[in-house]
Amino acid sequence: MSLLKIEAAEHVTTLTLDRPDTMNPLGAKGDGDAFAEACDAINADLGVRCVILTGAGRAFSAGGDIKAMKERTGTFGGTAPEISDGYRNNIHKVLRALYGLRVPLIAAVNGPAIGLGCDLACLGDIRISSDRAKFGVTFLKLGIIPGDGGTWILPRIIGEARAAELFYTGDVIDAQTALDWGLVSRVVDGDSLMDEAQSLAKKIAAMPPHALRHAKNLMRQGRSVTYDTALEMAANTQALMHLTDDHMEGIDALLEKRAADFKGV
Image (tube, helix red, strand yellow):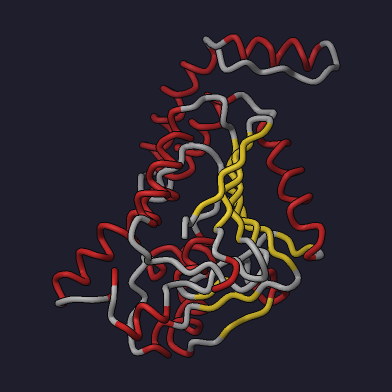
């Protein structure tokens, strides 16, 4: 069954994990290619200014396909080198595609986000949670390790100690705890989750597309460069932005007390 449902409207693309009957598991053949193709298309289209990632049905994603793990099939079958390549060429391809998005990504977590599902949610620049959502990185309970890059990104979001607690115990936390720990920025009623996500996405999408993408890149690079390097990158990028029509439009809109209409030029 195809993994992704893709919908686009008003500069916002929504990616929905679409295996609701099995809680949107990942790891089937082609999952990585589906994400890579979708995210490459988004990056190439300046008309897209924000992406929402969510899940169909009652779950965001239950993570890796447990049935395939039990049967040792697909990504989870074969020799150790074959399984390793399966992660690199399929599951990691999903994660790299999302991480490589040049536009802001909102994870609208509608239900349980477990294991790989939690890792996917963590790749969102902004995470909004339904009050019905739960979060867990339960890999050790299955006798495996976090194989999806979660040990890199989760501590950056909630800190080393809390990330370690989740990884080492396999505990699952509710939406309110996720909010208290900074894993999500807001918790909303489950029935209004997508309305909230769409409203936020439209606000983001009203921004100038070049500046939006460069702002995300500067935030991303800021994780690993020195302050001096960050300032130099900002100066060079800012010079380009000053020469855009969108910059003049922003100034005119402010002076004329109206909403700006950014065209991406």
